Length: 432
Image (cartoon, rainbow, N blue to C red; front, side, top):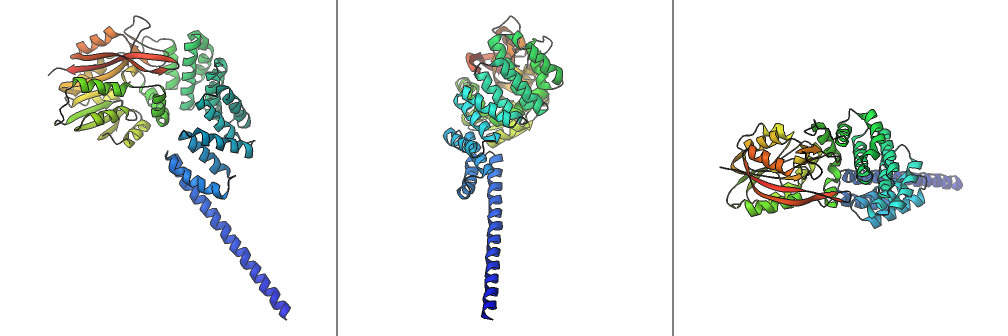
């Protein structure tokens, strides 16, 4: 009798233990899901530093969790903590050597740090393990390009385009690869693969623009708005960092000229328009320059406007093509700024006429423009996909549309590859 009772007790105790383990399992699983979800939400929002804390909690319990480990290492990469990112990538490769993610991440880190030849090896391994991920091919093309293996780079870049089904981000990589190759080896060196690319994707605005730029289409006098929108939607996430790497300094130079020539009245409230405002790089310096102002930013790219909004320097933002926007304005603004915007227009007559009309009497127009030091044309579409302009043409169009030039500064604008791009920072005045 006692034996039977003892057995029943043991069975009940065993069941209770199993039940507690089950509760513990489901509780642990739910906690994991919550932590991962919170971390991933912050990661997607670009708040990598806060996302790290949630991934760290997961890894404390399970250091070999693939998802948390990869996301943690990638967040470190975006925060430019390359030592921590590389440690994470090395751990991924050690624990999961047949997964492409560790090899791809380490290759990207090496690409950023300048270890190009080693990056090629890692990224080739990533492509072997997961040939369907077109970003692996994209990064490999960049590494090959840096190693001077330009023909291979172009072929892999086209492979990335094809794998992606013609994704705009891959078209941009292809366009830039061909442009860099043409700088090093001459325009004729890219014609064969350019033709392959164009034949398959000729209806894509990015491909059209690149094609026209290589053949110097004289009838092309303004960038297609769909092209501009696609380019900057794709670049939005990395735009500020990319321009920093290119030593882009036009906003600061524009602000310097404005402070010297405008005689800014601290008691006056200025109505300012930032044309092609992008992520707000110009808005940020204007915000610090003018104590009282109402500042509007206009851009074609919705993704760029989201990042401009986050800088909290604009009073109003609008998604619009800038000429269409200006047609609705008359004597509205004290200052119109266009940093790195004129380069998407060949003929400037219509743009300058509309800017003049939108300015109040006595208003100012500040802009940057790229110098044509290649031929005698007033303007033409360069192989970079941007228009470049002659000095006399600029002066004539400004004068024709009622402006006088207050200041013109010969300036370094940015890097393209290893070369300096030069142009002018110009401040023009609408006489009262």
